[in-house]
Image (cartoon, rainbow, N blue to C red):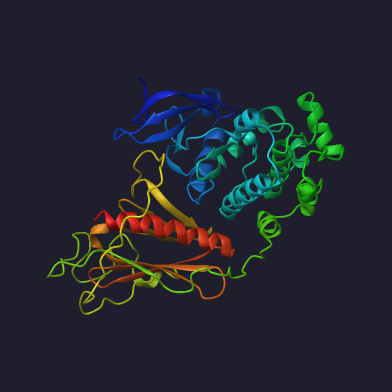
Amino acid sequence: MERIGGYLVERKLGEGGMGTVFLARTRGGRAVALKVAKAELAADPVFRERFRSEVAAARAVGGFHTAPVVDADVDGDPLWLATAYIPGPTLAARLAAEGAMDEPRLRALAAALAEALESIHSCGLVHRDLKPGNIIMAEDGPRVLDFGIARAVESTRFTATGTAFGTPGFLAPEQALGHDVTGAADVFALGAVLVAAAGGSAWGEGTPMGLMYRSVHEPPNVSAVPAGLVELVAACLAKDPAARPTPTELLDRLTGEPAGTARPGAPSYTPTLAARPAPQQVPPAPPHLPATSSTPPHLPATPSTPPRLAATPPAPSAPPHLPAAPGALPQVAYGFGPPVPYGAPEAVLGDGEARVVVNAAGVILEIDGVAADFEWAEIAVVRRTPSSRGTRLTVTVQLWDGSVYDCELNARRSARLAEWIAQLDHVLGRDVARR
């Protein structure tokens, strides 16, 4: 079997505007979706440069509703990108097999996709090609695929042919006309996806040019949409990008809960997930931690440490008592592929400025591009502290030598905060219990 970038290719999953997508595996057997760019695209310097920047931005996207980027080669031949492999049918396949969705399922789909777009847009990305074929109906909910990379293809196609990139029937008017595209174009596509999921077609049938013409000049056909969702879907399909709701506003309307409103029952305490008790004698600092300082060499000196990622002066000794680790929580099947510098990501939280990654290798705290990574062997305690009011979450890592590092994230919505907490509790509980 063929190897690409060190990954063993098993079979083709499909082809698209960027190239071919394969199911591949790492040497350890973990599955990835390996996306290989077409040779004619890779030969274009404009595409290569945009591909590089888009991959870098896409790495920051996390959450339950996307397939995270885990590896890429932005300089080689061929160019390729590896994302987590998410098993499950596409929304297009699900609709073909089971028919239209009822209102409760449409609401759930709309909320999941709006939350996915919220995560993507918070990292400065625009999807540009949201459609039923790019949505995987995974066991734990819908996942959006191919975010961000479409722009690399779009820039090359538009430069070469003067035509828009995307899928007619889901293209926003500004995309069809070749104008600048913002996140509002993804909201327009979301509206068209909901019409399709309801069993209709916002712009009817016909040629690609006919579909694009109607999306620019004619009102959408929302007759298939349940009455309770017609107003919301019509707002998404507004001709003027400024008139469309943002993903956050969509979530507010779908859940009836304004952003920043504390959700009743959300944890207000500060639970702690701790490692197993230390041996009788506190182990010495790991080799990469200098004996004279509690700040690892891969972190900048104190004066340049970014805000919210400051090391607290080391305590005189290790904590006198650390509770035993909680039992392992029920495991969720992951399709993640290759090891990345810090191990395959399992919990990735980010707000555009700060990021927290927790995986089998340890914990990464990142602020404004400066990362501090800690292996489980050196970690004594990991805490996650939600703000008593609002939507902020602080993740604290305390090492066996007493050093403490904090990273604060802004979830922007209480629902997303609750999701982050659930994700952290699951992954931390499992990884701590393995030690």
